[in-house]
Image (cartoon, rainbow, N blue to C red; front, side, top):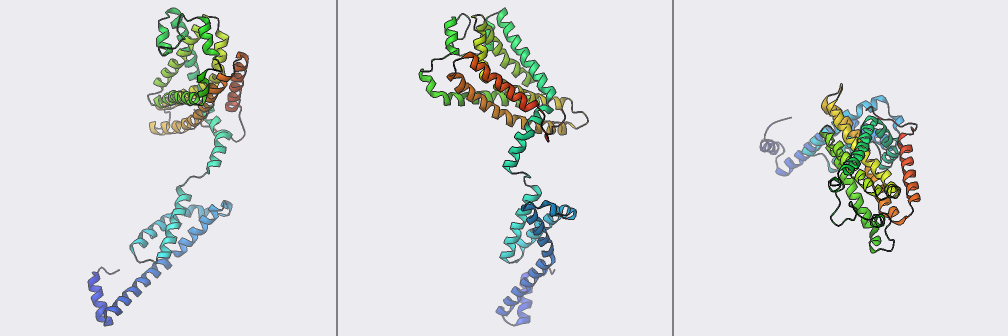
Length: 364
């Protein structure tokens, strides 16, 4: 390719062809000739890439040979290079547009997502989510033990000194659930009057509950980077509140009623918070004990698994908020509340821990 300035080439063409119009026509012809040569030299690879892409886009992956699969990224990079050159030359507009579309399609097949949304959802609910939960079995057990210890600690502290109740329960100033409240007042909280005006705002109440619980779960997960210690502390604080509340109602002989009030949504809500805390602990434990992997690789692997669990946690909290905001307020029978809570617990345990064919989980 000549590096001679364009003005010198145009002067030479004028001297050769005798007139400016003839020189311009000759320049156009020369540019078209270079464009044709450029296209002819690379069109075979473009056509082959187009054929491979059409087979992949139509789902006929079995018709791809090993050579096609291996050559796909090479052909893609070649097409990108050709497109870059074509944009700087006088390649005709139709071919340039076709080449741009070819590069976009190739990028999607080389770097784009491998699953549709429906396929991802099928894999997530069909085994991906339970497998991720089972892979964190040690963290789940640790989180469960910490939550039980938090409940026992909360009960023990307020039983030893009722002044601890305010610090643990964190109730607003106008909340009737404080030491010294009568049995009738405590019972009225568990069985609200369905005709009360606030019962008309159940949907708003459910949304508020979901937001509060989601904040707790996400915080328990996000704090896992500090080797999981803050996540465990948050679990202790959350169940310490429940332990203090149990002590208060037990003193008035309302233990069974409170358990029903908590169970209808709590088996789902506390399970979700348990998984969120376990997910945070899983990341922290992988950073503290990376094993044979590097610290970054271990944290990345744990993070991917924990992220799958957290997507499911959000869904569980939606279910819990619906049960808490609607079912708990509308169902006034303790036995029915316990039955619903127990059924939800059996459902979650069966879903997570009954193995299913084709589900795979990572190692803890």
